[in-house]
Length: 71
Length: 366
Image (tube, one colour):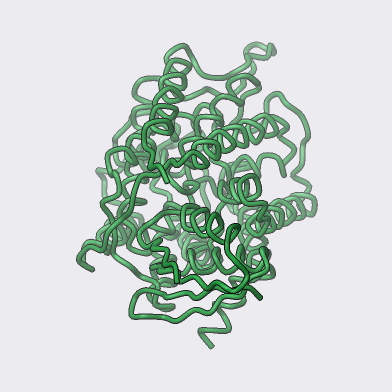
């Protein structure tokens, strides 16, 4: 499972990185995204939904672990 | 309850609500004393604060605007309440400082930040169209750099106390607002002498800071996301802001369409455009409009705080070195078209060269 670490990156870099991966993702693949801001989580969730993916967010202390897969 | 509030602000209704609130308050503040078409202007207000602290001596723009510390403290309150306060920093601070300085020089060439461009448009100032086109051009250029791997790199966790430094400084400014020590400079005429009561300005600042932190309201981001990601979420908020201000202005009869002699504005089209190209490019390279930088600094983001310091310093330079544009005026009944002088024009060009160099050299190949 590929992991994308967008912690510490400013907008819109987290979304750009995740979108690049999602556009080439195989239907059965799941990706893990590590983020550390609510803004990045919301933006990634929105772009994932637009591209037809579902997102599950698990808070981990001050950070977030996001699992994204095809809807 | 926290979850449902957070969900609301993350939704389209939430961003529209935020933009509407900001636009409405910005439309009403001039009635309560703020300058026309300047209910809220981050660049102008930071410039006024620089003047109040004596960092520049342009007598007509010196006033310690409570809205700015209000933004930071309101955002801090929201970030703490919703568990989003994160002390962080260390992502190219010097580059961000200089970007902040040049963004202010660009904004003071146009005479306003993106927020004020929208407010000016909603007040009938058609020069704002040139400014917004310039802003979009600057942001589009920044998108081009982003697509090619532009980045200032990661920020890193810092001790929690350092995240509170910017809010503490702003709390200090707020304290000065209310005790009014004699060492502060305060305009007796011009835009700096026009202001709502400190209580109202402080309350508006705190409210806007709280709401905007939750909704991630960002004028520059709205255009960037539309151009780069075809994501129009933030643009709904900006649209709501214009509609709200326009409605307030219509209700209050404060719309006077035209180019010349608009309040605190000039009709030099080329420099209205180029000033905002510079501002837009600097904002996108730094990751947010001047309002967003204030809200981020309230969340503990010291990189954003450095950008704000750069803007305040840029305002001091702009007025000390006569870089800032002058508004249109009438002299013996003859229109004197304002705009930047030679030094201001050179400042904008140097700023553009700097931003292009930053965009081209700060890259990470993927």
